[in-house]
Amino acid sequence: MSIRPHPSFARDFRRGFLRGWIASAGLFAASMVAFHLGHESIGGPLAIGFVAAAAGTLGWTWWRLHRVACPNCGSATRTVTERQRPNWIAHCGSCGSDWDLGVGHDSSS
Image (tube, rainbow, N blue to C red):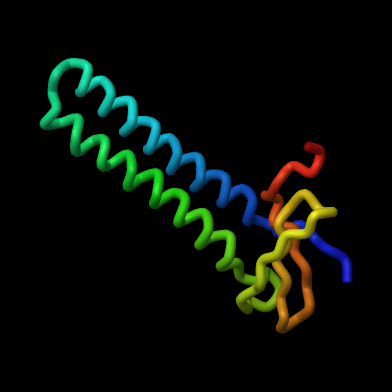
């Protein structure tokens, strides 16, 4: 069966990933500024927030990548990657559809 592009996964995934890393970068910058200005009582919690936001973003990306619903039938899919394909593929066992998620690794390097 042919692999079709998933209608909405890549846009939603990239948007959530970008928001998470912007929040992490903001917390990191704020903690560095607080430490530089001598406000350790504020810098410490901001640094902890940075670590939590970064870990949360990584956890969310893994969770979201492996919890894809099939656009055809709504069933859970199994997400896989192959060396010859640059993107992650979601395979639906119920209807047999394969979906290109539009996110993955660069195969040119």
